[in-house]
Structures are given as C-alpha cells and as structure tokens.
Image 1: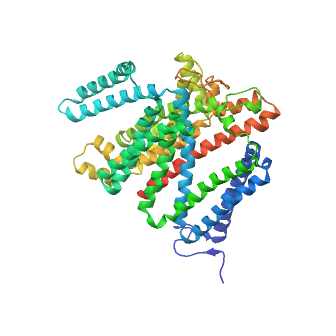
Image 2: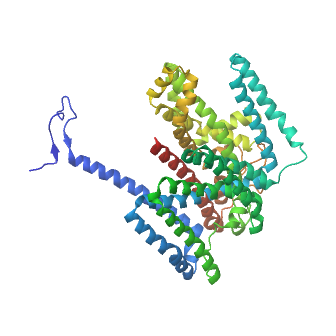
Image 3: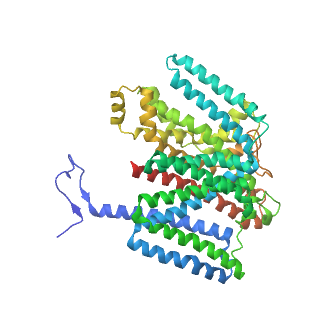
Length: 538
C-alpha cells in the first residue's frame, strides 16, 4: 500500500537528505501556486478598475460593439482557433507581427515628438555628421597608425573627437543649403532601417542582394516621406512612421515568411486582425455609432495641463520622460557596462573587489528617495546646478539604475562560456581583443535586456524627481538639457494631490496611469522579446 512518505538510499538522516515526504512537497507546490494566482488576480482587478475609469467601455453604443465583434473579434477568434489547432507556430508568427506593429507605432509617436517639438532635424543632422566624422577618424587612427604607441594614438583620437564635437558643428551649421526636415529624418532614420534590413537580406541571399534590398528600402522611405503631405501626414511624422514602425514590421514579416515557409499562414492571421481593425473603424464611422468616451484620446496625448480635467493633457510630461530616459541611457549604459567589464574581466579577486560586490548589491536595494537626496546634495547643493533640469534629473535617475545595470551586465558577461575566452587567448588575442570580439558580442543581448528593464524602472520613479525640485506641471516641452522638466509620474502625482478633485481623480489620473502602464509594459515586452530571440539563436 502506497504511503505519503518514501525512504530509500540517500534519504537517511545521517548522510542524505533526511526523510522525504511527498505530501509536504505537494502542499508546498500548491501553496506557491495559490500565492502566485492571488497576486495575479489582485493586480488584474486593480488594472481593470483603473482602465474602466480611463476608457469607460460601457459608454459605447451597442452597435459599436456589434460592428467590431463582426469585423474583428469573430474573424480573429475563428482564424486563431484554426491556426492553434493546425499550426501553433504560424499563430505565434501572426500574433508577433501584430504586436511588433503595435509597439513600434507607440515608440514612433515618441520619436516623432522629439523631431517635431524638441530637437530640430537640422540640429540632429549637424551633430550626427559630426559624430560620424569623429568616429571615422578614431577608427582610421586605430587601423592605420598602429606603429604609434598607445598614448600617441589616444591623444590623436581625443583631438579628433574634440574637433568633431566642438568645431565641426559650427562649420556645418553655417552651410547655406540643407535638405528639408522630412528628408533629413528620412535619410538618417531611414538609412539606419535600410542598413538593418539590408544586413538581414545579405545574411539570407548574399551581399549584392543585401545592398539591393537596403537601397530599395531607403528609396521607399524617402518616397513615402515626400508623399506623406498628400495624404494628410506631415513629412517628418511620415518619415518616422515608415522608418520605425511600418518598414521594420514589414521586413520582419517578409523575413519570417522566407525563413519559415511552413508558417506563412500566420501572416494571414495578422492580415485578419489588422483588416478587422480598419474595416471596423470605417464601418462604425459610416454607421454613426459612438465609441467609448475614453479619456485616453488624441487630445489627452497632445494637450498640455489645464485647470479642468476635461482639457488636461500629458504631452509635456511625455516629452519630458523621453528626454529623461535618453539622458539616463547615455549616462548609465557606458558606465554600467564599463564597470561590469572591469569587475568581471580585469579586477583581481581580493577583499577590495568583494567589498565592491557587496556594496553594489546593497545599492540596488536602496529606496529611490535616497538617490533623490543624493542628487540634491551632489548635483544641486555641492556643484551648484539649477534644480529640476533634464540633466540633473537624468543624472539622478542614472545613479538609481546604475547598480541594476552593473549587476545585469555582470551576469550576462559571466554567462559567456570560459572556453571561448581560452580559445581566443590560444589564438594569440590580447585580453582587450578577447573582451571586444568574443565576450561583449555574446553578452550584449543580456546586457541590453537588463538595461531596458532598468530604464522601465526609472521611467516610473517619482520620488527622486521631487527631491531634486522638478516641477510637477509644465505647459511646454523642454528643448535643452538645462530646461526644466516634468515626467509622467510627476504629472499624475500632481493631478492626484495638488489638483485633488472628483474630476481629476476619476478622469485625468486613471488616464495618465493607463498611458504610463502601456509604456512600461511595452518596454518590458521589448526586453522579453530580445531575450527570447537571442536565447533561441544561442
């Protein structure tokens, strides 16, 4: 007769694991499952409650729901059920195409905001050309002047970078002729997109095919940029949408169809979803059905703060969050990765490095308000910088996530097999060459994933920005690093505290929370996709 307790070799209390009970293991497993489900259900209820206040789905006409059920829900459900039964991989492909398009459209809106209201395309082109010239000069010095000693090469590289960053922009800025703003954005962003798409094509069909595909992609983006005003879209947003959203999504779908011909039916599923959205939108507009009276609408995303909840918007706070995250990434990524490389590849194993390890781990758990006090004391009080600017806010948030970036980067570097290092050393490579050509390329996916997750934490922080004196409400976008900046969490905090009223509580605050959550989930989804993709390749 079976019992709930098994004993046998290796289970004695003297030298094994002791007495093993199946009952205890089963109870423990179900307790973990219950705790997990409780947390998920609680979070889901909270999100549904907030989303209901922000979107108000019950205010839509019944005909609106019926139309979208017929054009979107029913066809999507049928197509998904068929694919789930016959070819689950094709269903994942189609769902991935839809998800990539949705997330890329979200981020293309932020990029378009930057070029329309924050950084002029001419200024962007000026510094982009300067950085390109400086980088090319450094590469040329490293490749063609190896007979010079290291310090001489370092000095020449520093001089080239100084000229490129401080002298060349003024020369370019005085040029009498510049392309139009749309062409500048199309050539720069579109050029990057065309290069990436061409690289993927070259890996499949060869170098000539890659060059041809990249050239066709760039021509298509520029043509779409110039044709944008004819369909009611300005040239700059048109260039951003094509470069960041539509072309990358199309390239992913085409590449997947070529590499996985057995899963091409998944593209039909994506067509059913996207076609259902378009047909449903046209149908409800033609039939005159009113949709939900959502507070998350175009006006909310493009308006500044107002004294009334009905007219309040999140636009300056969204732009401020974008600038803060760009500053945080520029400050934390090189410092965090550099520290991780040194600690893993160069630092000796002694008491000092163990002391650093312990303190980095401890700093990752320090409350965010402490970093706000640190930023106030160091940057504002000691260095005398103005409060609440883009640079100070970005530097404070960079300090907040720096331990997380270091820890995640070290884990990614530590995950590179040591056999690869030894093989590189055996072929005569130096330690720096091994790190540059072997370790960092293999560890980069993990480093990128950890950095994106850390940025996801930084974009939702409020306490550090309050401590450094960032304004809760702004009516215009910051345009310089020395400009005052607000952020989405600060704006929501102001609506919930300084403008505490029934309208703000039930309208503006839930809408702001939904927008912030969408951005956070999008950033986390990108990190998860990158991790899974590179794990599959590995």
